Image 1 (tube, one colour):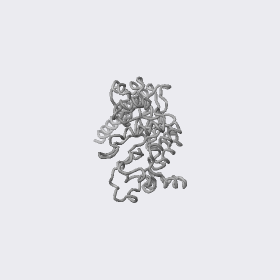
Image 2 (spheres, one colour):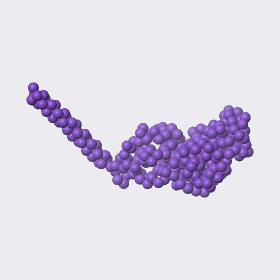
Image 3 (cartoon, helix red, strand yellow):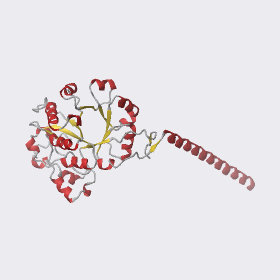
Length: 323
């Protein structure tokens, strides 16, 4: 059983936008150009990724702190597999294959559904730069949300990685398409580029959000149960909510009914086909359902007691007649 969406007819908000988590990781290796292209083809409205900066200052896409899981770094640089991903130069990163692991490990059990042509594309995927992703998003008019990871101490860009990344953003896409999640130096970033959609990963007071020019929240989907009532309050202040990571239609339904404007998902190709909540009821229908359930339950309980009384009575009479 799934929780119903309790709304009056006509009061349901528009379908939440779909932000592709690392692209379409069920259809292609995560955080590759192929994956993002697949996500847009499937109906994605935005692209989410993780950004790290290389040793020579090129922001690139990598979710993990090391390269071991999603590249063949063990083959190309066998003595450096333990190093932080940012300790590699861009030229070194371009020597790595970022797709073969997907077919070998099949993380979602979906690799067998790929066509021969798609499998060939998977084998040819490399580590993309942030600039390449932004160019795709710019051409398609898509939203972009990314987590920016600070390089370790001693990295040449450990103090300037934010400015370098911001410059790449401004060079390759309209800033209004970007959800800026990085909390460090937020006020300065807003002054430098007021078109960025300032986004907070923490649920704080409306006043604090307004003071920091934050227009969006990026929260874990568990916030549905905790903050459902407050979403309307945020909306009244023009503060939107994105929930992550939601990949099942029933959970997408709950986010939709709770008032989320967008969700980050691993399954754009599935959720894009959900054009209405799975279980929509008006408050009147919901109350009526429980009243009928209570009445039926009470009736069944009374019938059970009557049946037991009847059995006991007839058993007692039978015993008396036997004596």
